[in-house]
Length: 132
Image 1 (cartoon, one colour):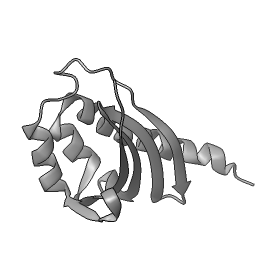
Image 2 (spheres, one colour):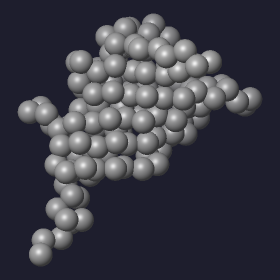
Image 3 (cartoon, helix red, strand yellow):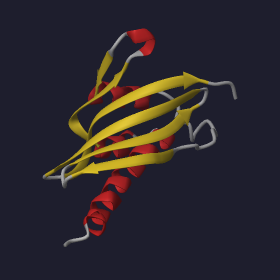
Image 4 (cartoon, one colour):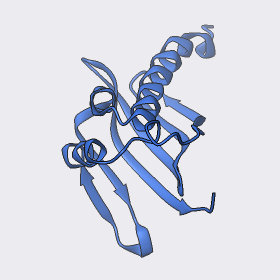
């Protein structure tokens, strides 16, 4: 019987690379890294105060480019992958924690393996305000 855990290791490593590019891009304010991690059709979703927001990837990348990066502001980097749930060979959900103080985020990244490799196709997130 094949060892499915061992067979999943290359996919997990590829997913981790995509997510690390996402986290690097967030901290550095690098829209090119972020664009490479997200599929062009991707959307970002949140529900502050119970109101659903739907932000297309292109609009989000413009926002990233228009603000100072956490790195340029000298903000400490506190991000990490909390969990990876791989389903089969083409779908995964990754939970990450990251921050742009005073905002702390819990992100749920949905990834699919396309002809171009693993890409984030949707991000659902929650924001918490914290004092420094």
